[in-house]
Length: 351
Image (tube, rainbow, N blue to C red):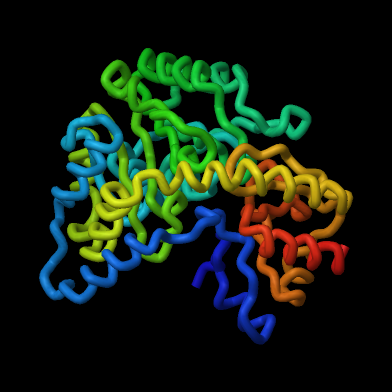
């Protein structure tokens, strides 16, 4: 079995620690799952004997109304990760471009689909920001580009004008630009790139309830694109019924009963994120000024920090498997004040 390389592996951490641990590795909404969402999922689970709606009709209609698109522009999946793989296998590009560091599943999906991947390296001296150099990296052979805003694990937003310039260049080359906006609701308000979907049919947006509503265990994400033929190819490229009845009910409750939950989280994060960043910096850590619900930092020379933190009952995300980072880079989520205090206390103990 391949090793698990993402955050949120609480069971392994608990086995090593010998008891419950504080999970600071999974970058979810710090307010947790809204009660209405959990209740809707529980009610749906009691009615889960029939197959779920394979077309997610009611959920797609709610997403369309919330995001301001037509329902046929929406494709639901078992988390954004599934849709990343569906896109890679629907297109089967020969050459694709990703940034580094960024979410590893882009390259994982592309490699699984037999695609050669070019990495556009981001620089620490520029806070790992994506800049105009990206446009030069999009070459004539590029068939698919993956971008993430705010980027994971850096937490840095990509300038919207730059994203549109990338969409324009990709359109001229006949390439698809996939922009992962899963963390955007927790970083800033606004519609993201939705208003430009009709202008750029080669633009596909990835979104998820996982982060915004802290429902990672239910697995629910969706793609938005004006190219309905591409969405149909993605839909046909995977198994039916990939979105369970409880997940569909949870997503519907999130949008209809608590649509402002991410907004509440943003207000909370504006107070807690600077305090956590200041606390990390005070410990001598090199902190990237993130704009999302997580922070990336370097503990120079401390390649074993994750293991030492687990011994303190705290799980953090090692970023050693991110291209463009080293073994002493880590990511932590921004949690409640007491959770952040415990995280900093544990770090102070082991550093």
